[in-house]
Amino acid sequence: MKVGIIYGSSTGNTQTAAEMISEHLSAEHECILKDVDSIEVDDFLEYEFLLLGISTWYIGEPQDDWIDMLDDMDGMDFKGIPFAIFGQGDQLGYPDTYQDGMGMVYEKMINGGGVGNIGFTSTDGYDFDESKGLIDGKWCGLSLDEDNQGEMTEERVESWCKVLLEEMKKF
Image 1 (cartoon, rainbow, N blue to C red):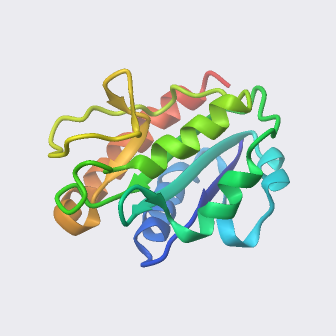
Image 2: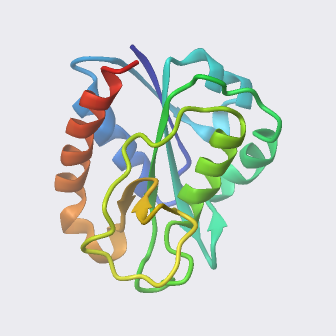
Image 3: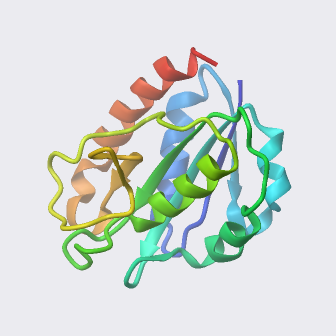
């Protein structure tokens, strides 16, 4: 399957996570890494499966490179395109908006007809108050916090990729 791993990264943390995910999935799938700043929204349609990486900045803002892309996603037809999301955030510094970026991307993809509910993860082990990244009590993807739980990133990515590989067999 041709998998587009599209990410935005200001500090390099989301890019590193994207690269780790690609390493785990590339034995079974053709993974293509793209910085969201270097593509157009129509490029999303080139892939059979999308993995979208975004971090949340300041008080609930999307990573800078995603701002225009989120606007461009309005009205797009993503019908039938399966997707999963991974995000970076700071749960201790911004507990009221932790992983809001994931929720923003999820909403745009669902509104465009994308196939979601893939790669949802538990909120166990996180300390936050509110998030747009929660759907029915779970993260709408893989939640990472390099600032406060960086030692857990590799294990979380590896576990998530195992689940994704199983879920991707449905498509």
